[in-house]
Image 1 (cartoon, one colour):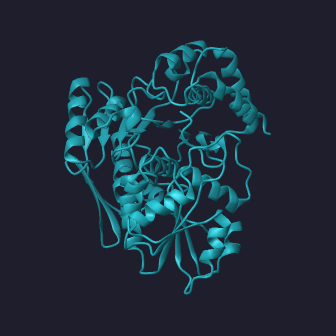
Image 2 (image 1 turned 120 degrees about the horizontal axis):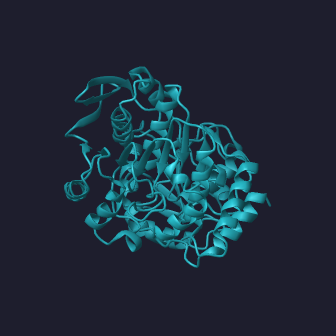
Length: 439
């Protein structure tokens, strides 16, 4: 077991709940560590239900295309915990991560603290020790009481698409969830509001007015849309004619707009329009409608079979993923599906009727909260889609390999499943601490 894994396993025992939203414990440990959150580079703080990771990835690609050094903090990890913390563009090393975790563990002592809180504190310490021009900071869950929301003056706040998710923590209605997400807005700091339903937009505008945070709103203050195979972005500063983002799917047009609006709100003369174009063209991010190229899973299917991976795991993600599949060249499409019992499986799979011809269901390996393949099969059938339970990812692919002609395969439903797939495909040893939901 890696040294960092052993420490992470100990940290999991410091609080009886995986998720317990509060800022008190966070401020306490940050004070013990010398308040690193007050010494960070300018922060782009990103919240939302869907699109946070893709928006962050595009911001990162643009900033790096401009020659700038960027820290990033994201969650969850897919294969290795180190993915969460990039220091000036590089994944944190095993040695540095282990030392930081031990430092934070010693500072906290036996005080209750959640896994996400103490690892966020560790990331902040890491970011203060290496110079960078910006920090891209992704909210873990919600916004108002999320451990990342100790930043009192971000350079810009971004709120991506909001939908119903994590209702047990954020509220039962879309308005309550929007209010929680809007908690990252700060007095006098520009907020970028991505495309939203009218009720979400109204709720966030009320919060922004209350805290005196100026908003730049999609389809009011700026627009992004596809035209003739190009991305067009327009705001008060003019029009940009740009390449389409390298991330696949029509929903990435909205995410690209979020990123460009955030970058332009920085008013940083070092970031040219050319850097924006290069960033969009070069951006990569795992498990966002990712075409799986060469790797270990290819041996289970023919060379003609397409393998795609997406980590979307809620109803709104199902909407955009199904639309993305419809927009692809016509081809028989089948699904490999795994999901957690904290998600609404029926709301997700209902989007794929008449999009996929068959679903192969999986019980996600080593996940106590995974919905069984048998139950997912019944849920799929209840939604009018033929389904078969598979005992493993490999067995599902072997069954699919018998289909003629070779189909398109979409593997989806959970970031847990995405991590399992990526580890198998690359042959990389995953972290012992599971990737998703450690808040």
